[in-house]
Length: 137
Image (cartoon, rainbow, N blue to C red; front, top):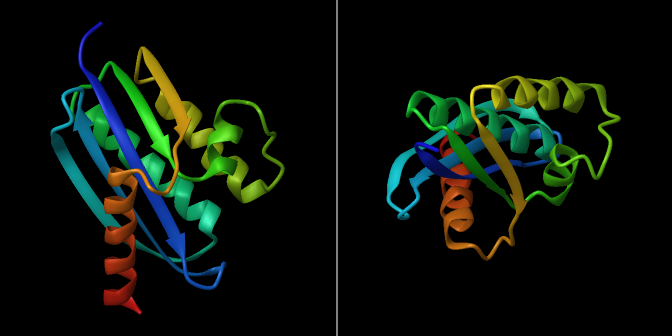
């Protein structure tokens, strides 16, 4: 199939809405970190930050030449919206959901998995989110 990558993304907001940040890790199938990134988002909700983290991660996976991506998210809401188990009623989230749908076309296969916050890569992404927020607020 080609290059398979794993994405671990996290977003967070202090205040919900409030100052927000994102972070992600892109890993090879063997578990080697190929790219890690983080950034400040300004004011948005936790769910918006989760989506924006995923969007940045998918853009990076595409740049790295992935054919298949497995996305690991600790946000149950976002994971279930992306797998079709929940509908997206909020208009702001709907626009972000649509951007993910557009990005999915860059890959042959995309999976979305809800993983616990105890996942070591999610914890690493969460640390990067909090580091960014500590620096910016």
